Length: 144
Image 1 (cartoon, rainbow, N blue to C red):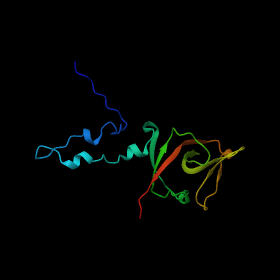
Image 2 (image 1 turned 120 degrees about the horizontal axis):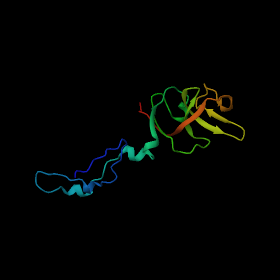
Image 3 (image 1 turned 120 degrees about the vertical axis):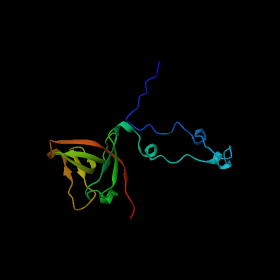
Image 4 (image 1 turned 180 degrees about the vertical axis):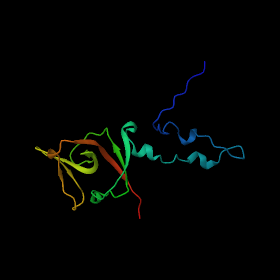
C-alpha cells in the first residue's frame, strides 16, 4: 500500500540537516578537504521567526514610527503569539484602520504613542472599535 504524502503550508525550516549530511559531488570521486569545514548558510526564517503559524509580514506605510527606526516601506515581522506589555511596538486596528504604534498602559488608560513629533498620542478609552493585531518583533529595511 502506498503511503500518502502530506505537504504542510508553513515553512518547516532546514535545521534537521547539517552541512555534513548534504551530499557533495566532485568529478574526481572524492570530496575536497574544505568540505569538512563548510558551514551551513544562514536561514532568515530560522533566525527571525519564533512561531511560524502566528507570524505575519507587513509593509510599513507612513512615517509615524520613524524615530523608532521604522520607516516607510520597511517590512515588519509581526508575531501574534507574543504577550502584549507596555512599551512594545504593535500593529493595532482602530476604527478599521491598521496602525503601527508603541503601546503604553498606565493604571487608568492605554495609549498608542507615535515615534514622530508630528503625530499625537491616541487615548484608547475614547474608541470602542479597537483591537490589537500583534507585536512587531523585527523591522527590515534597505540601507541607502
